[in-house]
Length: 281
Ligand code: AMP
Image 1 (cartoon, rainbow, N blue to C red):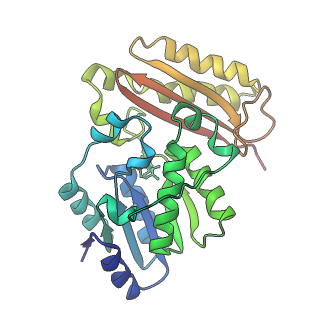
Image 2: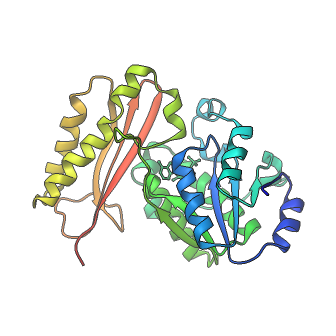
């Protein structure tokens, strides 16, 4: 039976009897197959699974993006139930941020390029809410999608630096058959934009294919992704990156593992995607 809880007190009471270990899956709702894959992984590895559904106002650097973020709690709860989630914590804002709340968790260098540069304050909002969730739930494990690769790196850094006992587990990106990474934001794409959106994945595939055949110039791979994107008139690139997979520093030469990533606008909808190039050994 899936229980839907609102307050910290209800959550605390439910967690007191939950068999351990416990897996946490933080989400902002409008659940899709990407979220389902995280629930499945958590379910397989833990006797108790908690999903949070909370559209976190602090991680939106553009207010309109927060207000238009899609929401459908009834549907989300039925997806959680179908995946065997034990507890859905869907709190109002003041159960997450207590009165007088005045703390921000800022992660250093890893949070500054890419999404951090494009969305000032975004990762402060993410790190702060995840620190609160980790504190409230006290899970042994928490599951995040590789789709938001930099987010996983930021949260790992935070958990290590603050000695939080929750292990951070990254799960593979789930895609539509045409390669588009599932995202709650895909719902905002107009039909022509939706048809154009797989260009992100095509750009990543073209660049990763070159890397597999031996190309090691970061600039050649960036240029490859840019030219794939340029062939799609509805795609407006925001950034294209070939970065060190540990530091996210932009690379001239790729001598170790690297992260290909990109952010592209289609009208007012902003999509991101990435691919990890794992150096052998
Ligand atoms: P969100 O609800 O968008 O904040 O996402 C909640 C979690 O689901 C995050 O850890 C995301 O990285 C993950 N996620 C979102 N989309 C996907 C996807 N297509 N594949 C795998 N994980 C995803």
